Length: 177
Image (cartoon, rainbow, N blue to C red; front, side, top):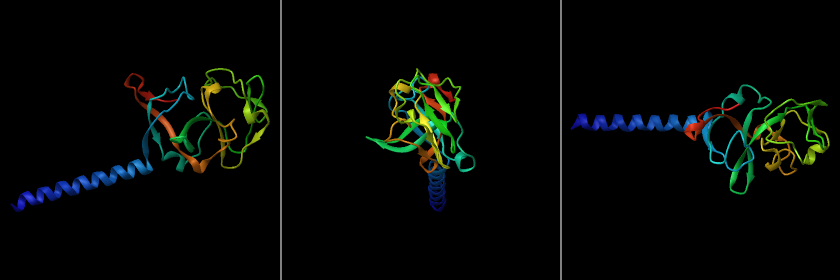
């Protein structure tokens, strides 16, 4: 009888340790998130499941073209998924032809699904602060992003992490670029 109780107690302690480690991992290291909407097409589709790295930005700054998840309440969605275009201290502008400029230089990138039709607030130069980023959705004409006054510049403190791998659908499993 004593041996059975010891085994039960050992199992309970083991499960408690696993639970605590899992909670710590989800809180500080990584989390799963689902894509909602079409603003990141064709890179990400509605319903994709991603793993978000919540740890690396504690040791290094986000980089241009990283796909990030940041806190922004829109309807039932507590976070947005967008791509970083502008970095702290840079000036971002989008002209009426849809060309993106960083510090007056044309940004060479191929993530946009189409030519930007509405530069929004970026028609005028946007100077980013020391902890601010400018983000765009890859589906440029169907994305509420940094061009919109309600989203604006994304502060580093609101960045949850970097989306780095798609885990579902299984046919598209793999690292994100």
